[in-house]
Image (tube, rainbow, N blue to C red; front, side):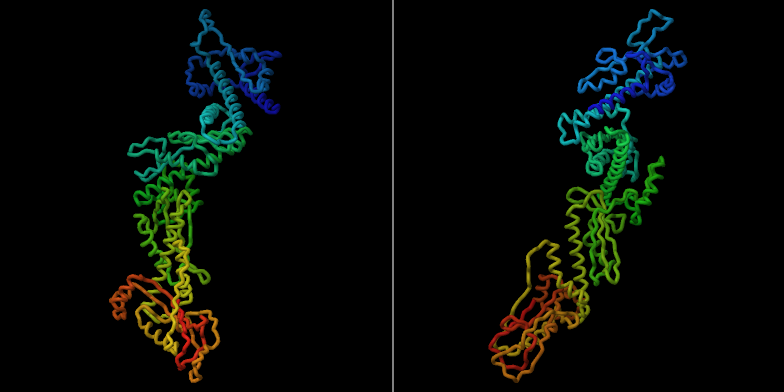
Length: 618
C-alpha cells in the first residue's frame, strides 16, 4: 500500500508540476504559472478550445498578459504541495480538489465587476484548460487502476458490470497516458465489384451494415485477443489482468477506435495496442472475405479480388509486397487475389492405377461437384453448409512416382473451420465416386477383352471393395457371401463336374476365368482324399483351386447391342442384371471333403462315392 501511495503522490505532483510551480514560501497553498511553456500553451489553445467547445476572443493576442496564480483547496481547505502529495494516503476516502485562478479587473473600467460571463485572457484560458485536462486525466487513470484490481476478467454482463464499463470508457477518453489508434475501414461493395471507404456515404443502392455485422462477428470469433461484446460494436478484452483495459469501438462511421490502459505502464499498453491493431485489421480482412464469399454463392460469379481469372494461388509474400502500395494509394484498388482465403480443409485421395488424373478429376467435377460450379471460374466450386458458412473448393492433381501412386487433393478454402457436411459427407461422396470409377474402368477392360489378365492391384482392390465401402456408409455389419453345395451320391467324379461347370458358366456374358498368374491363394491342402468305395483303378490328380476362380463382370455396356452385338444373355438374365446393377466380383470355388477340409489331391475315374463331397463358393 505504501508503494502504491508513493507512486500516486509522485504522479500527481509531477502532473501539477508540468504546468505550475509552488510559491517559494514554506507551506504556501499558492502556485504560479511560469512562462517557459506559455508559448506552447498558446499554440495548443485552438485545439484545447475545440475539445472543450469554448471560444476565446482572439483580439487580445498582443496585449500584455497579467500574472497568473492558482490556489488549491482540498475539501474546502487550502492545500500545499506536501498536503496534495499526501492526499492518496487517506485510503478509500473521496476528496474534493478545487483550483482557483486569479484574475484582474480592467484598469480602464475599475468599476466593472467580475462575473461568470467575463472572458479570461488567453493565457488564463489555456492554463486553466490544460490544468483541467491533466487533473481529469489523473482521476481517470486512477479510476482505471482501481477497477483493474477489482475485476480481473469479464464473467457476466449484469447491470453493474455494464455501468462500470461505461465508467471505464469515459476514463479512457479523458486519460492522457492512454495508447489509442484509429483504423480506417474499407468494405467490398458488390454493386461495383471494388472496395469503398466506409467513411464515405454510398450514393448507389446498399449500405455497409452487413459489413459491420461481419466485422463484429469476426472480432467475437477470433482467439488471438479474446474480446467480449457488451453492447453493439463495443468490445472489451476479457483478460483484464493480462491486457489491462483494452477497449475496441466500432462506431459505424468508417473507423475502428482502440484504447488501451495498463496499470504497469505505457510500454505494456503499447504492446497490447499493437496486438489489438493486428486483430482488428485481420477482422476487417476476414469481413471482406465473408462479403466476397456471400456474393460468390449468391451469383455464382467470383470476384478477381478473391480468385484471379487464371485460378492462380498468390503467395502471402507477394500479397504483402502489394499491401504497402495499396495503403499508400488514395484510390481504393487492391491487387488481384488480395482477399483469397486460406485452406480450411485438405484431403488427399490416392487413385488406382487404372484411373488417370485427368479423367478422375473430370468425372468428379461433372458428377459430384457439378451443382456447385462457378460460372466464370473453371474448376472452382462454392458450397454453403448447414450452419450458413460459405466455402469454395477445388480439385488439384498430384502426379505420383514409382513408389507413390497418383492422387487428387481436395482443397477447401474459407474463413471458418469446416463442418462435417464437407469433412464427412462430401468427402465420402468423392471417395465412393473414385471407387466406382475404378470399378467401371476394370469392368470396361473385361468387357472389351474377357480374357484379359487382371493385375494383382486389381484383385486386391476388388477384394477390399466391400470393406472400404461399408466404412464410408458407416455400416458395421459383417456380410460373408458364402454358399456350400453338397454333391449327391451319384456323383463319383466331382472334378469332372467342376470342369463342365466352369466351361458352361464361362460361356456366359458375365463370367470370365482368371488365369493362374493373376491370383495367389493361400491353401492348406489336406491329405489325399480317401474314399472307402474307391478302387485303385483311378488316376491321381492335383486339384488346383486357382484354375476355378471366376470374375463376375456386370457392366452397363453388356446390354447395349451396339457395343456387344453377340450376347448369350436371355430375357430373364437381362431382368436380373438390371435388378443387380453393375459391378465386378470375384468367385472362388474350393473342393472340400466331408470334414470341410480343403482338398488338393484326389483321383479321377473312380467309382461313385458313398460319402458326399462339398464345394465352397465365396
